[in-house]
Image 1 (cartoon, rainbow, N blue to C red):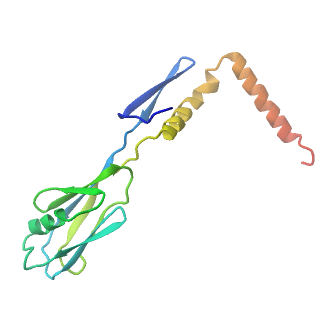
Image 2: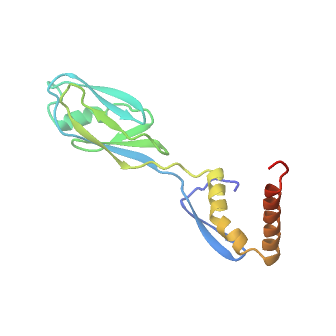
Image 3: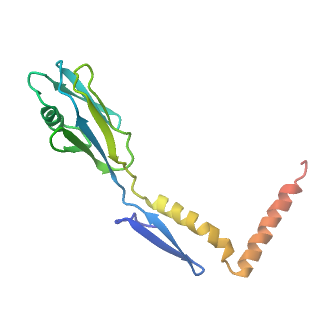
Length: 173
């Protein structure tokens, strides 16, 4: 395998007439969603934690008087490695790079601005040349001996039996 996949799908590998599909992925960006369910009752910070990086957002009950305004304040905050979106009281966070991430969390702290964070799309790492090659080897391994020509099977069995005999007849064992 000399290049990484550029589209998701299957690589078909044929060994001695047996075709095997090996799935490959170009990766998936993680997406989390926060639904703000209450307005702040005390000025302070809420905390959004994305892939282990905590970002605080100051909220004030005199300014953020609706859940939509709290969400808008969070959406307007910069989260390195993520883009924000959503409408109303919902904030979506989309990773700018594919791959697995630590699930996002939200804390209202002492502000009273409660909300619920969920991972709506789990991130998936993109296939590399190594992972594709490993997947191909694993997929064809069951067929490599079973469908090999008789002479190859005999050679394999002869070598296998010889190694067993050596292991059994080792001096000092």
